Amino acid sequence: IKATPTVVDAVAGRDVVILLDLRTLVTPACTWRVSATDLTVKLTSGSDDIWSSQQCPRAVPVKDVVVRQAVGTTIALVWDARRSDADCSRQTQWALPGDYHVVAAALGGEPTDHQFALEAPVAAVVTETVTPSPTPTGKPSGGGSGQPSGAVEPDGR
Image 1 (cartoon, rainbow, N blue to C red):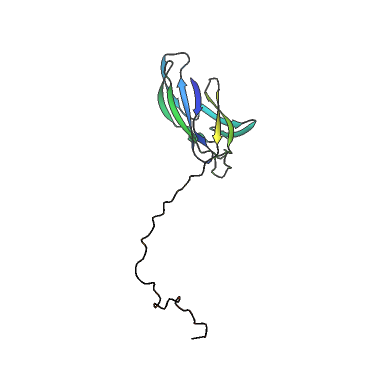
Image 2 (cartoon, rainbow, N blue to C red; image 1 turned 30 degrees about the horizontal axis):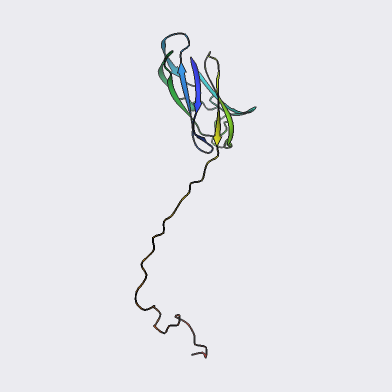
């Protein structure tokens, strides 16, 4: 089995979908069980190991698929855009924007590498439309003296 990864529209701080195109190399078709035991996915940035399905095996969906030689079968794996640790805890640091490699390999197969950019998130622009209120009619409130309420005359009255 050959597993070829692809990542599109990856944004730091958000879930990143890794698509894996699965194909057989020898037989026309076969049924294959996708699992963390039979499939490895690793993310790196330069020489820095960022994330691994060996540390986070629950990220790999467990299911039986029909894999063909001529037409790929696509499965999706979700990376939470954080570094992984031995416990796959949610306490690790976020991966920073930059260039990354995702390498995927089926058990006994050759690894396949795909480079992608993890983009910086763009703040949403919120435009609020202000609806003017109608202009009040009539006399101003406050007693009608023309003075603001609570005003004191200059001579103390």
